[in-house]
Image 1 (cartoon, chains in turn cyan, brown):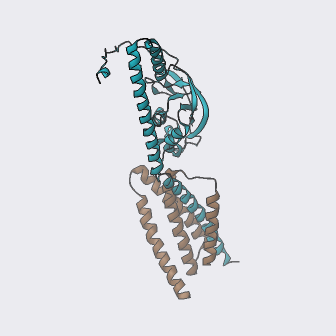
Image 2: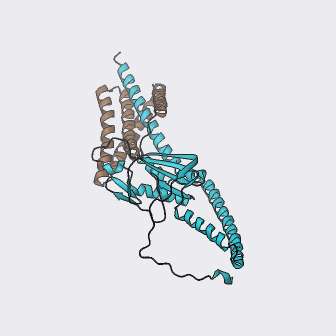
Image 3: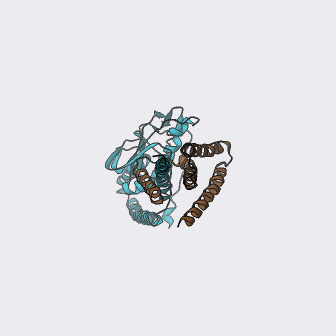
Length: 241
Length: 111
């Protein structure tokens, strides 16, 4: 019995060492694997986006030319003006939109605070939200809302103590970010390797992203005022081409 | 004895891989230092076993305390802004190779 003790304790210690090694392997594996860039996929996607953009621009040129000739004929000018107004409203975010897209949720970490650790490490900050919506914009989102606050050109996302201000409305966690656009494109844009969303996940925040067939994003509910800015008279120079 | 150790290590690896726990990246660094210390303890234990001077208390306490101490030292180093984990790596690395050398000599004598 006596000379069995060393073997048993070496066995137990080896077991524990094995578990530690496996945990470490798993940790480094996931960390490294997630940083191996799948460049090919990224570049293909970029190419697709650019091709699409080029096509829409070409279409736009065609429709602009057509409009120009319409204006010259003056009969259909009014209808064109209506259409232009509709487009401007869409661009300004004054119309509620629905369509396919993604829903992202961000929430504070449920991890217990380590002694000496900064409690800020466990919270969702306004910069996290800004980075995520920036990523969405870069991935071709057409409309974005945070907790049903529509993001327009002049929307702020700002820290206000324990809450976050969006369009001068206070919102708190959990944050639901909805974006309309190509769901695959939006998802891969947000989940890009080494991107910000990944960092949030590593920091232990509760994150999720979900592709949806149809989501609805409300219109901007406040008024847009221009107290200081005045439009500069622009002259039609395109006609000369 | 050798097969026995490898077998236990394998079981540990399998258990670890199937554990639903994922180590956060911030702790991975400390874990690596702790593993180095643990590896040193195990090799030291095997050497002592071959030297016939194995002491169970020293072995177990050395394993636990060295691991914790090494990880704690690395943590303290990070707080202080000194790369103290290098000290742990050097000390344990040197001892690891010494122990390995002694074990190798024993094995060569044996076979």
